[in-house]
Image: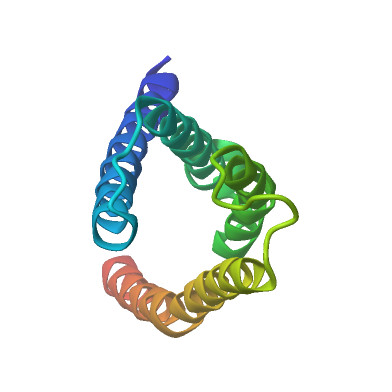
Length: 147
């Protein structure tokens, strides 16, 4: 039961952050570039997209099953669960109309690949270095305490 509460807290926090950020971005973009307001229907669609993204995020990074697999595996699962629904939501929200344009598909693809590569680089360069440091300190501590 405690795990479910913790997962719901993670879901709430992810939903609140992503929804607030996305609504602010949509309102600012609409104001600056198209002088149109944000409709209630559009906000509901953004909420649905953020809820799905938050659920995928919590599943991929915070469940016991996924924690055992490692960061890159969790990241891949997150992208596999989220990106197809994101594309469908973009059509439903009329961000992509018809078959979309090459420009929109290119922007989406570049963003997804860039985030994936940045995440892998962070894992390889920063987190693995910290893990090695942590392991060395732990081994040093254990050797001092066992003697």
